[in-house]
Amino acid sequence: MKQLIFADRLESAGVSGGVVRLNFSVEVPGVARTSADEVQYEHSTQVVMPLAGFDLSFKVLQNLVRQVKEGNKPKEAEGAAEDANVVPAPAGKH
Image (cartoon, rainbow, N blue to C red; front, side, top):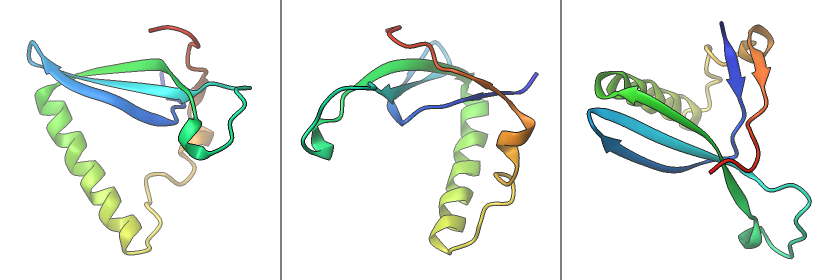
């Protein structure tokens, strides 16, 4: 089953017990602010993967950054959202 989980940013990352834990957060909706520096975020999702999987994922991300810097549209991202089931991130879980 494919799932699409939305996050506004990567909040933190760490290694523990041979796995990498990536913590993502979303912007808190409806919070009044006067500048971009005052955006409030809350933890929404944690992705846990083995070190080997993270190593491969990091290489994929490096390639993506290179493509974006060169002005190329990444091929894998085209239509990806259409093929996935959108799963809303749970709000308020920490």
